Structure formats: structure tokens, C-alpha cells
Image (cartoon, rainbow, N blue to C red; front, side, top):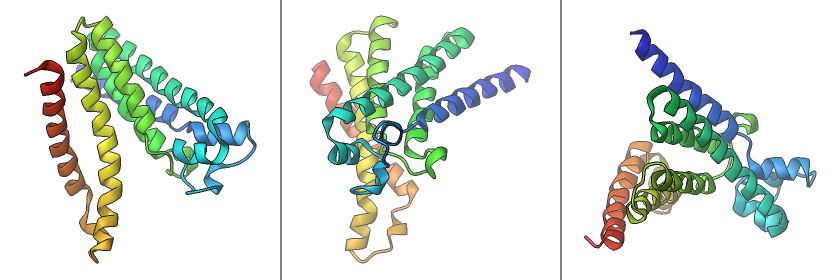
Amino acid sequence: MSHIIFNVFCVVLVLLVSYLLGCFNGSVVISHFIIKDDVRSHGSGNAGLTNFYRTYGAKYALLVIALDMGKTVVAGLIGGYLFWFLRQDWTLGLLLAGIGCELGHMFPAFYGFKGGKGILCGGTLALCNFAKLIFLDGILPPVAAVVCLTLLCTVILSQLIGGLLPVIAEKLKMDPAVMASPLITTIVDTTTLLVYFNIARTLLKI
């Protein structure tokens, strides 16, 4: 029983630490501390990279990319090393940390739970997992690419579908609430499976 409680504690700890890291939104941090402005007061009002780039240009956007990628890598290393030490399961720690960091980036407690879309964090997580599969697990690059590209596509699809369905419902004079989370999750899961099989068929020639 104590072993189960300890494992649950470790999962919660990784999720919490990575969530807090994710809350440091690169766009907000750079615009506030370096540019002395707030990106959320411009353009779409979103704290994502796209709105930041449109507002301040590529020069500062590179700093945002470095910060957002860096926090994802740090979160992944913390989760990976902790679970490798406890269970010799780097992948589980990496994925848990990635989930926490992604949630922190999209719903930061520091900024009223209004953050970015999380695509850059998801892409960084996919790259970290790709490197781990090749260099630590000895997985062949095509197989590792299938896993990581599917992960990246899942992040992008979830953002697109979650954002488009309520808009489509409103255009069709339907209640946007109809497009609830279970429906979005079902569509994302189904689409991800199709993406996975097509990527596997293309890269692995099966």
C-alpha cells in the first residue's frame, strides 16, 4: 500500500513541478521583462508565439522559442531522471512532465489560466522523445519518427479541432456547448489513429 502511495506521490510531484515550469509563458515573460510591455494587450490578445511574432517580430520571437523549448526540456529531464531512478522508466517520466508542462503553458495559474496553444511545447516534447528513443532505447530512427510525429500531430490536431468545432457549431446556428469535451476527445482520438497508421505506412513501408 505504501508503495502505491509513493508512486502516486511521484506522479503528482512531476505533474506539479512541470506544470509550474509550464506556467512561465515565454511570450508573457519576454514582453514583460525585456520589452516592458504585455503581448496580451496587442493583436488577438493571445499569449501564444504567433501573436507575439506579429507584434514584436522575429528578433524577440527567437527568445520566446528558446524559453518555451527550454522549460519543456527541463521539465522532461526532471520527470525522466526521477522515474528512471525510481522505476527505470524514463519514458513515463518524460510523458508525465510533458503533459504537466503543456497544461501549464495553456492554462497558467500565474496569468489567469489564459496561455498559449502549446504547439511549440508539444513539438519540443516530441523531439525529446525522439532523441530518447534513439540514443537511450536503441530504437531505429524510422520507428522513433513514427511515434514522435504522431505525438506532434496529436497536439496540433487537438488544438485545431478544439478551436474549430465550436466556431462551426455557431455558424450552423447550433449551441457551441454541443461540441463538448467528450466529442472533441473522440474526434481527436479517431483522427490520431488514422494519422498514426498513415505515418507508419509511409515511413515503415508496411
